[in-house]
Length: 198
Image (tube, rainbow, N blue to C red; front, side, top):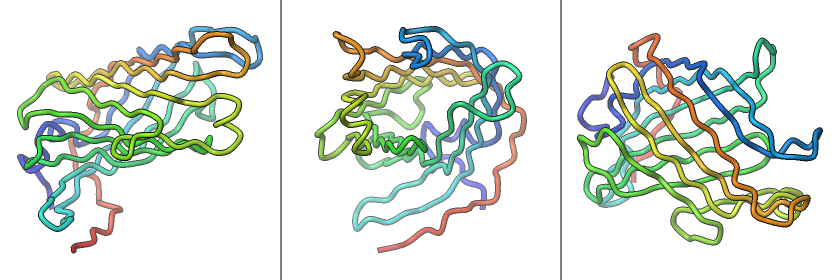
């Protein structure tokens, strides 16, 4: 089933996207300093829903993304997760995991027709929060995550900021990523999500 308006502001994201305008500003363990790295990225979003949590009804996108530096074969960054829309409470959410052993549930207010929205998470929050494995919690603890998403005609852009307490720095590390992606396929991918109902 292809979903439309039920997805609220996420409706325009369904499909497959590519972008080669990425810029990652992060701490390089090899160089021992903050560096800027251009990257290319591929992301897929497939719709699903409804998911019933009692009175709450969610619709969303199952997503996967990967990013590569230059012509490298293996991505330096991958994510899997969900983007979710709660129409009744006007909340947009992004729940994802990276294979470094970190999980983020970010969210924020939005309207169904929004072309720009923001999602945030903070360590210790019982709603929109951040979890890291034991090593990362001690060596590079993520304390805040923010992303602004801007939708266009066949494009979407994001600017995200991750604030990290890094063991090799005296001040907080502000890790930023941004990119503009272009839709290369409008097809809704076959869902891989088994939806449980209350």
